[in-house]
Image (cartoon, rainbow, N blue to C red; front, side, top):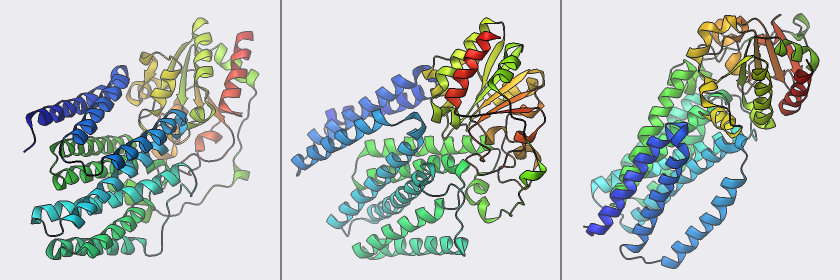
Length: 455
């Protein structure tokens, strides 16, 4: 049994983790919560190192140093637009670490108790699935591979077959204690993770990341039993529970069942694309849009990933301040899944000191959106696509959106006519109410700011 001081240190670390999650639930305390969680993790690592027989202390210190050397520059240099990719990679590394630790422990004690073997099998399988699945989500988010669903021939049967083989291997490992079968189980888990994420479309990848994060938590919790470490069980359970809750909330925000989000591509039917010759768009100039904004009474800004890519949040804030000085009411419509992960737009606008009370959610905006004079859509696409509301054949049908097409006028700021991350054409672009302003979001907003000052 661990000494009292070790148990107390682990208890303090566990409390730090719980309080960190609580802090992360509100923008006001998110930074403090993050630091508190890091402090709890540091305490846990130091306690684990000091306590017990450390057989490879130098190697452990070298591994920690390598992690610090890689982790800190990576976290500090990554752009806000790439945070989801970093989260996916970090999550995958966590799953792989849990699987490798369990595999190592099993090789040292191949014929432990049945509960030990079950915990080991679960850790290896779930950790492997989380690792390979997270790598695929990274590739999709980074657009190294296509963001569209990838459907392999007989993909459903292949996935079910790999899952069945994984279950048989897991049972065989528990019954025989074979390390060779455990390695094969890890390989099957890697294949299963890839097959699990490939059919997920680009707009749904953040939900897959959240679910894989829950998987990693479960793997860590199971590894806690393998290592007889209570803190790992607590930490893994917290991650698994919070990831599951977040996944459920995101699915609700998308307005679709989780099964449809993950496996809907297998049932999707091809949709004939409308020809561009039959539809036209109305492109405007900066001066045209400046007049619309300058003489409006109310303006709603709907930011999206395009704003993040262009780093145009400060320009958007300055434009809003100039409009507010002219007596225009300006609010920001924040969709739950705008950007590439929950809270992406909140953090982006917080960087520009946008007052939190100016950020409005769907339920606050849509009931009165018909009285809004101008909706300024900056880099968003799927979250304002009327097809999610009106086209049952659309892959994003059922997802709650901002009903901006019901406002008095819409200004749509985009680089081009290219579809959004979901790969779905947006009928709002062709709406007679819509004025297109093409160009980089930051450059367009800067020019718009200067033009509004002259109105």
